[in-house]
Length: 76
Ligand SMILES: [Zn+2]
Image (tube, rainbow, N blue to C red; front, side, top):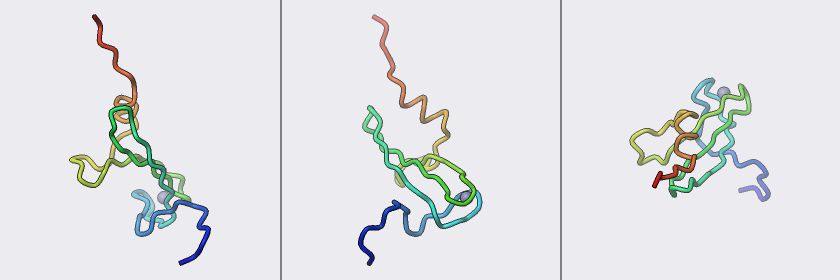
């Protein structure tokens, strides 16, 4: 119930690598209006991306994030 929680640590979230509870989340919305969450572990510095929980693939590889994030031009 504290005021001024500086870090956006997500309660109940744990690092997928070391299991540490201090995970920082940063939300990102792609131009496709897809919502992804960047997660970073305080302890082991493991970083990963997650799609919304209703997604078919909750954990998104970085290469896939970059692939989705890039602007695709249609050739005329
Ligand atoms: Zn970790």
